[in-house]
Length: 185
Image (tube, rainbow, N blue to C red; front, side, top):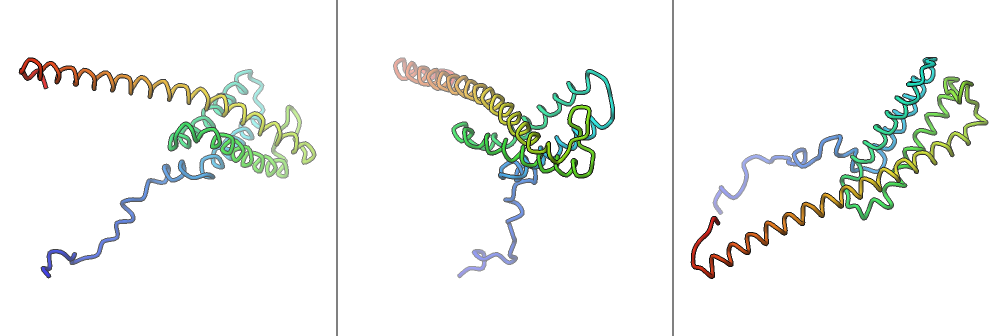
């Protein structure tokens, strides 16, 4: 056999096929929701322990929560079909709420977690967990529904345009066959 069929050096190609870290996190079940939940709760601890009395503080915090959680959800569900979102979104919300709840418990034990104007206690933690889960499920379900509508609309518009271009191409070819002329194609 000729030597040209066999490589002279063995190369490990696995590192070239492996997706980047952010993509691996977004595809996986636990990476983004746990990171988002942790960041959101730590951000809450920092913002509300600073003692700011400004009206803008909770508004800015709420906007950051929406941005972080919805951004993480978008990165996750963007890897899958819209049909799979119906079961992926609630699981994502539950995992995000779980991470946020665990961090909240740690902050309560450390004496840093605020509940209103008072320091939260371990006895109040179950109520905090239910509130977090409810809020995240509602936020992410509404956001995912709006995102799904936009995605389907864009796909419909894109494929409708693609069909129109295909029909225009077919029409030009048909005219060329009938007249015997070659048009712009």
